[in-house]
Image (tube, rainbow, N blue to C red; front, side, top):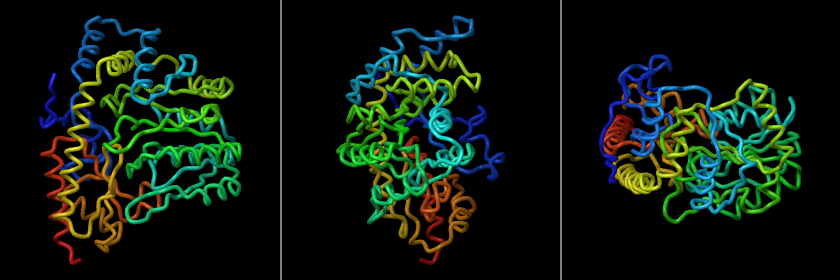
Length: 393
């Protein structure tokens, strides 16, 4: 069927984190929110049908899945990303941040180092600090609007901070880098050299723009696979984050057992019945919906790029290679981060993610979620531009 991504769906009044919790998050009511990374698009009809059938059955007891569930996940990974996974590698969790926290506890001790790459997805750092580990920030290099890995600093910090675990974001949130095979191989070799295990968060792997290709780190080399926890989920791809289901792949038996032990310590066992049904339906029947969505998101990116270049002096788009997030460089506005954040709220009436939450090197940036109807994106960019015009640049 043909999907209409231009249709605006009112999400207010449904306990929606994005739209209904401004006051609870310290924001004034009435802001246009483009912050949290879920989409303003209804899920594919096949997913809704699977959920309706589950609801209509009327019994919501403990649930598990059998081989057809794994087959749907396996086929998706193989057909979309060229990686042939085995059923015994898979551990299901209610989310990837949950899996990252379990990994930190399973593979490191208090006082040992865990490496992240800022500007980066802020829960990574929170999980490391909350579990009493040493946070090592291998800050990404930025030159002319493009971010790259600093391998020399990476090795120095691994030794200096006794790093035992590397948290990789691939594709990278917030700036949308899709790492090349060469970049990932170099990272993998460094981790092998220093005995560092890797957690690869690949939740955005299905969002890659034309001209780029996502590479599963664990699929590049069997040696990389044996030291890697590969985190996948249908939540971003099919906009079902609220159903809480992720599929984590760990080929090394000892690593997998250690990971499972940490999950067992939390008392968590079977996943949400609705999430399991939605995941299987998404991977089995959701291809057409996703293909249409990717075309629409490319249109949103093209629209945003043109608008920012034309209407927003002092603001630069960091060209994304993947994800549905826009990383905007506002440093040429020559205002402080506090002033920038106030401008977004008080003048633009927008709720965005300020760059500082992604690490100190995110100062002067704003992140926008563009996975919304184009009329919503246009409204947000107009407000942004009008606020910029009030400044003396």
